[in-house]
Image 1: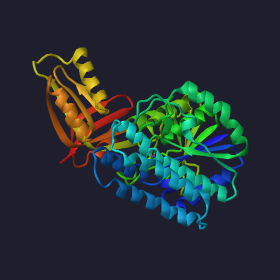
Image 2: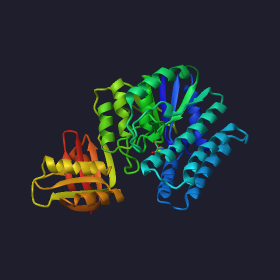
Image 3: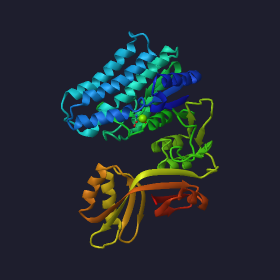
Image 4: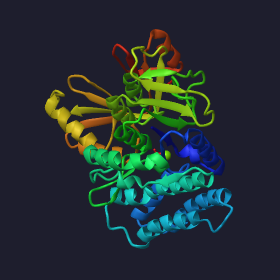
Amino acid sequence: MQVFKFGGASVKNADSIKNVASIIARYKKDELLVVVSAIGKTTDKLEKLTKEYFRGAADTFELLEEIKQNHQVILTELFPDRLHPVYNDIANSFVEIEWILEEPPVDPYPYLFDQIVSIGEVLSSKILAAYTSETGIETNWVDARDYIFTDNNYGEAKVNWQKTESKISNDLPRILDKFVIITQGFIGSTSENFTTTLGREGSDYSAAIFASCLQVDDLTIWKDVPGVLNADPKWFDRTELIPELSYTDAIELTYYGATVIHPKTIKPLQNKKIALNVRSFINPAETGTIIRTTNSGLAIPSFIFKVDQVLINIQPRDFSFIVEDNLSHIFNAFHSHRIKINMMHNSAICFSVSVDDTGENIEELLEELEKRYTVNLERDLELITIRYFNQQTIDRVLVNKSIIRELKDSYTCQLLVKNI
Ligand code: ASP
Ligand code: MG
């Protein structure tokens, strides 16, 4: 039994969907559950739509129309028969959004976000399931909301593992006996049956949840890169493929910001010793990277770049020490404004952190912190993390940059830098 996960880029147009169906066809003899993300940039577009709706803007139906069009183009290419039931099915999913937009917003934003944005995955999975079925594969579309149960922390819901595991392990193996299952990433539901999402880019995590609850042999995440590389090709020209990686190295790399796999993915897999393959949907014959229990450390240094960092320096107004009491107040403020700390450092009277420069949230955080502390900001910084660093690797990334902060432990070096 296996779980496959395909991200938005792998289903971005009709040809990509045909390619995904051909990968599924190769493995259809195994028991196979497929998790899919929303098509291309649909999630971003639905997020924008939700924001506009929430602030009472007039253009929400235009934004929706654009998303409908994107899906329509794909449908007409994949299903020449205009009477195919998938057309109705997709139209009905869009109606769910229309119903929301027709009324003024009364519910809180995170709740609305989940009800609207989740439809992206419903659409992509319906299209993929209908198309795979057309190609002669026995396919069963499954609503992930009937299997992944969460609390009601909309936007970043926490999984109820016990309930989820019992439902998945009771019901799905029977279906997998006969069909390839196609389901959604990213979404779940509360005990009152409201849709939730698991956090942006959370489809990898969904795939890990299904893999763990089904106790499969392995999970494969199909990507537009050859596997896990030692740096993001967006920032680095000479990247190398890492053929094998330990769970520990994988979790450390994702923790520091490697975006190849969602950080929450590794834990459930490691706990059940399920191997994770990261492979290319462009070259499906290549084996990519395998993440599993292994004693071999990373043979080559890995680099993680995070741009648009802002350094926040926080100092108690009365020159008192930065101690537990202050720290717990500061951490709570970050937590309640949903701001993730990428690097931190403290001295006797100053605590400094580097975070993604996310605009609005940061302004609100500052307002709160400034009640007790003197706060100053330094913007336009870059955070470079090197796992298995040496002096040569540090010199390599510091060309034309000066160091603002530097943190090292035995394996990892973090450099907060600015351009000179
Ligand atoms: N479509 C969702 C997002 O873009 C989930 C995912 O792609 O993993 O955040
Ligand atoms: Mg996505």
